[in-house]
Length: 363
Image 1 (cartoon, one colour):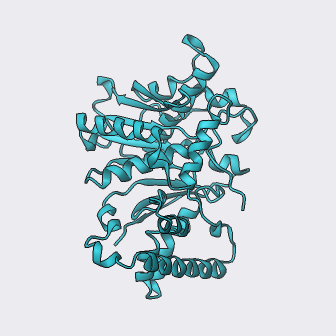
Image 2 (tube, rainbow, N blue to C red):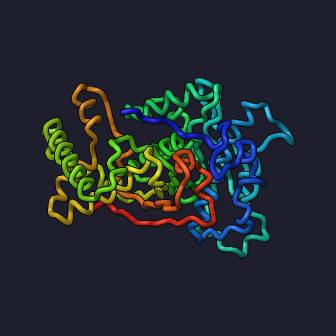
Image 3 (cartoon, rainbow, N blue to C red):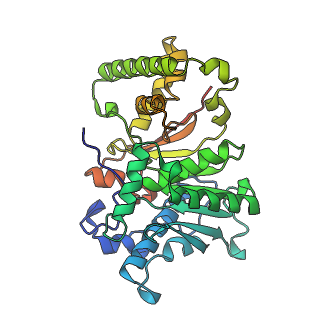
């Protein structure tokens, strides 16, 4: 099976979403959510659009660096300034010196104070995905492979990221901080969120097209075949977990998923994006297994992956990044032209999105 790794950055050198050329897609005035002149922070669409725009700002920061665009030629700043954010600092990878994340501070003008700011963040830490350009593609694809091998937590980029998250939270408190990311960046934000949640700190997270590497069962059209395959997969995974972790119940007085279940990230997926679409079946399958009376099997299976179990059996530390107990799943049902559009960040601030939202709370 061939995997397509990484985020197809919106600034690729070919015609992409809606037929917009790359240079236009980097320009906020041509492709940004200009309809959000005033942000209603109680509106889920507004919050989603702002979070996605801040992630796009990181993409363009790195493209500005690569193309040496400075001053009036730089395109990044409107992606955050339009929403009254300031760039506090950017995070730089220690291997290729690329900008992979940014820390923004929300600075609304006094004229906006009469609007509801209760659900606005004070700080947002945003992470970009893979940029398929010579200056950054090698390092980004290396990190994509670490996701596939359940080893992103061992990389220096993640160490830089989680230290920045801890520092911001220690300074301003968890209720004032958002995490956001797209593709590889969503994996970074997800891992940072899980890491903080294990210490009892629950950060609001916006995860766009976060990778879920698995057999593409969600692409099967026949619902009975799809359901049968998922049941078989759950039984095999649970069996392997039981065989390789015989002391599971004796050594763990607390279900690790139950401990994380209070953290509920916003998970944005597109059924046409095979890199993230498996989250749909992964979360929905739990309910179906409960309905037919074998929820206990699924509760064990949902915490493990076959690849992770095999790696653990060989003595290698492995915690599948993509397995999460709870999520607010938002599915974009708007038809897409191709995979690139289905995986792109631009879709998430479209005002005409046809979305379905469902809360999955692990019990």
